[in-house]
Length: 523
RNA sequence: GGCCCCUUCGUCUAGCGGUCUAGGACUCCGGCCUUUCACGCCGGCAACACGGGUUCAAGUCCCGUAGGGGUCACCA
Image (cartoon, rainbow, N blue to C red; front, side, top):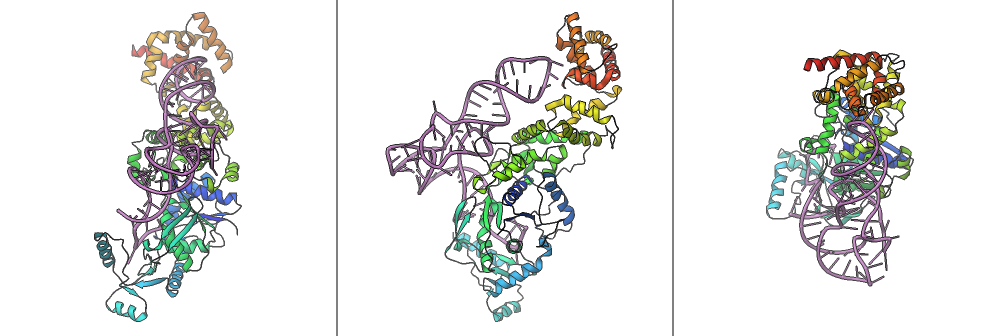
């Protein structure tokens, strides 16, 4: 039998870090065993705009390169892949459960059940439904109906014995049947609940391995009961530890943003993203533009491979050394046996380290391609780009080197695209590097060296500046820093020779002149 | 509270009875390099939750305790 795994997103409008990790493990397992990975949409809640809410999720999968063999958009032989379109199958299953005696019609009201539950609680006992309103015969059912009661379908769970599950991650896990409840599987209006739906779907879709988050572990007994009652062969189960909050062991949740913002690393990443978004004039949604949501990383210019590689190591490891995995390598080495048993907390700093490394290894040409859309979005470069865009951008990217840690960081060098007379000078830098110690006097002198240079490339500039330093007997830092601030407005940046060369003589001189004028004005 | 799961540096982890005075990575802290920043290089801090067993020998096996977490819906 071939390996088939699935990930079942709810159409919520966003892809959560924890969810992707689960999806990744499913995908890897399927790919490793030459099987199929499918996407099934858990929309039994019947939201109205399913397609719209699903789009960002599918987009996330595409961006990450987690391709699905069956599911939305691609279809497949086991469709439909939307639970909302499979209601008839669930109803049929509920009927079969009833016919087989594994479920019963229950006419209790929620209040009556609640009362029993509270009674048990007060008595300090474990709640077990009395089945007082259970109708086993049509006559009983009619009698309840006569009282004006409506019925739901409940599982008639065993009340003795135990269930042994052989979990592929956790090993043997035992459950006492007596602890399980007679769960409702079908409402009075005929609609069916998640647990029934998921069992029916996993069977219909021929899922061989149910790989999901740990919070489903305690749901497994009722699902096993349903599957067995329906005569289905059981899939293998593997329960993954969940992804925890930064610096804690609580489950990561998209609803606790406020709390995560107190985490320094998390807050910094979010802030960095916001700064990129602002400068690139990105359209972001307050609710989803944060490091818990996958979209965030795409928007600010992360490399999907970096995120994937980081997520892979969140709960799985190969050995005590290997941290870098190509797609092929992770597929080759992945195994459920090496999945950890305890939750792993999400560490933004470490994610960043993976991103740094991936970016460092990216060929310049590809880096340029990554970075270009941000300049265009910011309105600094035309779309489509002019013919001189590529050489200049390439020069900037090359000069910036490792300083561009994510594509959006290109905007740190936006000054190369602003008009000379619109350059904004950082006040502190200006005073420290130009005014203090009369650095501007040296700069003025150096300007005269610069103006007549026959060639204006980095090499020539370096030669010129070095001899200037020698003749004038000054420290190189004095002039270098003055020049940098004068032409970029900032105290930090990459090599000053490259900076001047990229700017070109005309712009370099214009900026130096303007800075000099500002010094005079400040006096 | 019941049930289930988990417990090695701050974080991610290696370790499947002796090679562990516990290894790697990220972070952090020093230092070097230097034209600012980033990179790079060198060095440093830092962990087997606790208590009992089993064994010649336990981070590794067993049992407790403590702590953390998940789950207990006519949500998914």
